[in-house]
Length: 69
View 1 (spheres, rainbow, N blue to C red):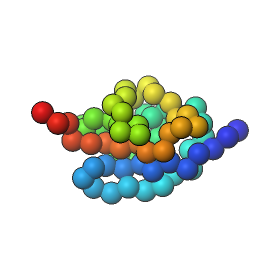
View 2: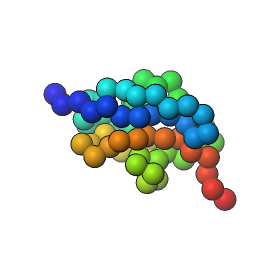
View 3: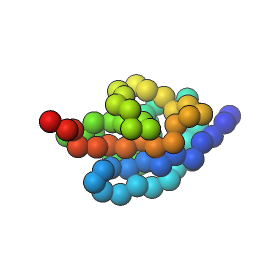
View 4: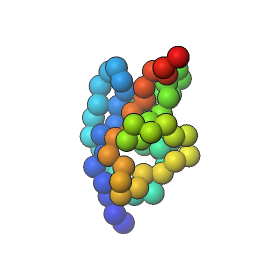
């Protein structure tokens, strides 16, 4: 098993670091971080993704951000 330290949080809000196994779904990471996606977009390294995306070697940040309209 390989792990990656990833910053997870909301913008605006707070960000914490978590040690996540590579291949873990974003949905599972958000459950671990106790975050709710209602009203937010999910961004990995600032790129919009869906809940089924998985953590890779290149994943550094997972943020819930308010959508820009």
